[in-house]
Length: 254
Image (cartoon, rainbow, N blue to C red; front, side, top):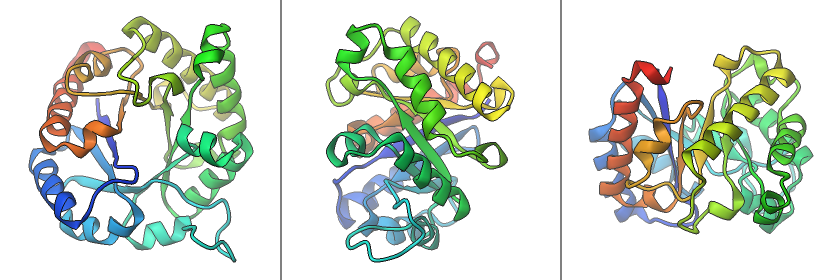
């Protein structure tokens, strides 16, 4: 069973630090795990070049909802593809919060990604207030319904469950909570797409690190992890990668 390990570098990194990190990750990668690194757009072409011939894929951190146009400072899905990307993150909670991105806009971005030949990593998750109010499952089900493109079943995509309150906080839900909400997301996505549940892949994101990655990855319904800060530290990210390789071999987690 393949596991996905996705490193979101956010607005960090330079040529020197990126090269050192890429060398360590590429050396540790193997066929049991799909490793994706998502550097800032300024490093995409160089990272793609460094990874040529390796088992590591490259992804963008965002794309515009339009194929092109007068959108100063933005980047299109086709541009990411031309830089060598295979994936792109859309709807990350930081984009939803800081840029007011709606489910409808996330859906359009995912559509553009798929049209350009990229696999969108579609992020969903509840805030602390929504969780406290008992609305977590309703919120993520609505995000699934409104963020997935109509023809998403015809291509490759991932869903990323990232409880907003966990990102960068050092807090994570319990394994039981993660298993429960992943099952709920898989069920909701299966209804929307018509795909069998085993064809819906949901990764977990939110304060993932070397200490907790093993138990998260061993949780039923978790197809991998979306890693933030820990993906910028070679030793820690490689530890997470090795935990995923172990989890991918465990027949009890299929």
